[in-house]
Image (tube, rainbow, N blue to C red; front, side, top):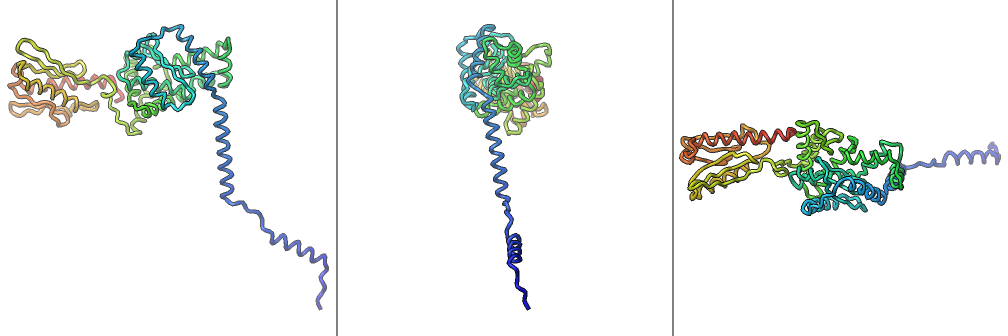
Length: 397
């Protein structure tokens, strides 16, 4: 006999069934990932907005004008038209690829003793007249300007001042732009910029950014390398000399190493002969009566000379071709064993990496009272001497 079910029991059973059958909400993994990505992007946007808020280019340029006036009261600005034209030309090419919208750059030469360059907030870049005498190519000057421009791009002067004081960037700007700025803060900023007292981190960032600017602007980035290599060598011989831009952290030797490594990493061919005035091949002819002496030089060193009758064009051509061959086969990584003299009977040849620079017979050197072998062996020794002097200037090579 079946028992009638009470209504209350049925209600209880229905409630239980509904709980069992009801599906629990499940969040898909994709949905969670989207939320995480959105949160990350939002944090980046907030971060970038914060950074942008900390940088006021108008105030930086106003501060730059103020500091520049003080600098130019202390030191005479050089008005040489040719030098300033070169400085502006190179500086403007770098500025065009600097990607810092709203920043106007100013390039000036100061009559101040020492090889130096420095930058001020707001786009002001100064080089000394001594630095222009010291650089050996447009690529080297571009390297120096790019380094200083990088300090401006990354706002290093104000950031270093922030690191050295208790103030924020915006507070430092506000303090320095008052009618009577805080002397201590102003002193710190001036010391940082004028003496290039940047941290290791900022100096390295400026060097690596400079390499990018140089490549974008079409300059040989090796110019920054050869400039620093030469400064390092001269500091080694004269450690008491105050080089200005030499007073940086990291040490110049470290800078040379990581710049060279970065260029190699990028697959750049470091050809120091192209960038500097070293290992340049030239010729000179001296006429004395019926005789002509043709001389081939590497830099200021005569490495080969021949005397012959002045009307013998064949010898003029031979010297010209020998100079061209020497220039072509000479390289900065040339080893002494790769230069040799091959003698066969009365004829000798000067070879560089098995390429003939010049071939002579004993009859062609009789006027020098030497055999062709003796003349070319002397030439070999002088080429090696020129290479040795070069490597002494560039010990990192």
